[in-house]
Image 1 (cartoon, rainbow, N blue to C red):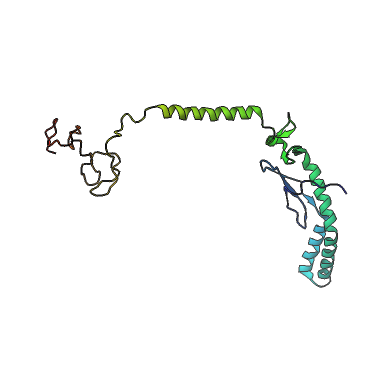
Image 2: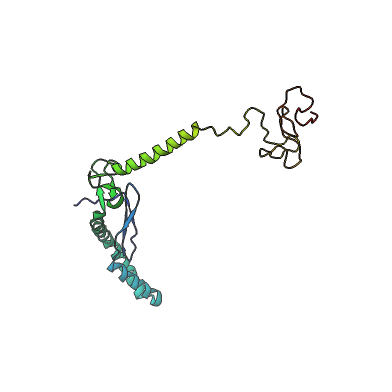
Length: 209
């Protein structure tokens, strides 16, 4: 008895009308559908069943008998259709000798190496991917080396929420909800001049602290 392949990566779409199978690539999952093969016994049975619904009686018993006949021959007919579908579909697949996976020729087979791309990746593809990845890594390194905080005060205490009303400050000098000053205590709330810790008046605008 001949060995039947593709017993794992396929779906059977056969009905009592005929046989059809879908085969999948083990690597990318792309599917290939075999041509539909009509079942003569299936169509005959369907015709008898339809007649049985209309007339009943003898035809009903004939339909039942035909169904038993169909059941008796469906196994060999189904297996034959499956083998024929495999033979028709195999040109679209290759069996990788290293990983023993069935892969599609269109996307997953390295014809130069006679291996699947999982076992023998395409050099140009890998080079392009490595160059792109390296470019991104270098961009991140160069951005990290830049001083992007020169306009941000990193020493004074930042306030995310207004202590008076709890609104988000969004980096403002005054609360956008209640108007309370959000400047740290070592800055003048009127002009923003840096002050000594114990200053009572702003040396720039004279505002009382």
